[in-house]
Length: 324
Image 1 (cartoon, rainbow, N blue to C red):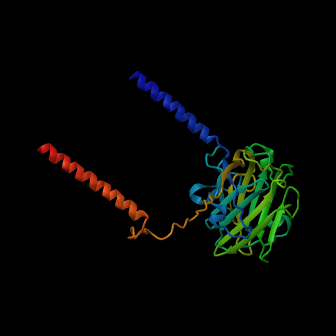
Image 2: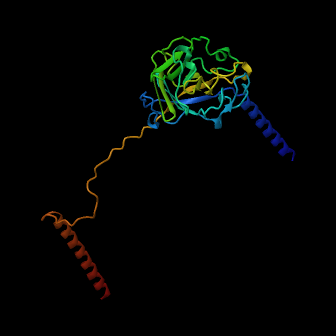
Image 3: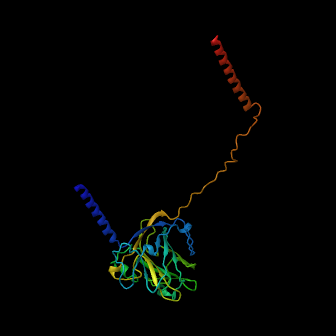
C-alpha cells in the first residue's frame, strides 16, 4: 500500500510540474517547411502550390481579450492566438496562414474571411493600419518574451526586425508600409492581394536579405501576424492575431510574447514520382496454335516422342519377360 501511495505521489508531482510548465508558456515555435515547389504570387491559394496551412485562426482555438489593458496575461497557456472586438459586433475574423521558405525568400499566404467588404479608408503611409490588412512582425533576432521592450513597442526601430503591413486599396492597388524604416516599399518583396466571395487572399514573398535573416535550415525568426477587420468606409472594429506585439494592451503583464518560426528541412509539397508506362504489347489471350516450319521444332518434338515411345515399349517388354 505504501509503495502504491509513493508511486501516486510521484505521478502527481510530475503532473503538477507539467501544468506549471504549460501555464508559463508565453509563445510557441512552429516548424515551417521548405518551398520546393515555387508558387505563383497572384492572390490565389491552392494546395498544389502551398500544401497544408501553418496557422488556423478561428474562435474555437483562440482567446478573446479587450483593449483596455486587461486580458490574458503572459502566463495564459493559449495566449499565442487571440482576437478582440474593438467596436460593436464583428464577424468571425477567421483566417488561415501559410509560412514557407527557401534559400532566398520567405513565403507567406493568408486567406481571411471578411463578410463586411474589403476597405482601407486611408491606405497611404502608416495610416494603412486602420483597415483590412495583414500586419507582420518578422524578427531575425528570434521570438521575444513578454517583458522584452522590443516586443512591447513594435514601432520602435530595430535593425533585426521588420514591421510590415499589406493591404488592398479600394482603387485595386496593393499598398505596403514598413514602420521600422518608415517606407512604403518592402525591398525585394512581391505581393498580390485579391478579394472575392467574402475572402481576401494575400500572397507575399520577401527576401531573407530584407528580413536580415538567414535562409538555412534551423534558422528561427521571431514572428507575430495580425489580421485587422474594417467595415467599408469605417475604421477598424476588431483584429485577430497570432503572437503579440502589434495590437492590444502594452503592459508587460498583459503580453504573451512573439512566436518562433523555425525553418525545417521538410518539403512543403510532396511531388509524386513520375510513372513510366511500359508497352508490353497486346494482352495475353492464350497460346495460339503455331505450325512450326519443317525441319525445325517439329522434328525435335517428333524425336522426343519417339524416344519416349521406345522407352515405354522397352519397359513393357522387360516386365513381360520377368513374369515368364
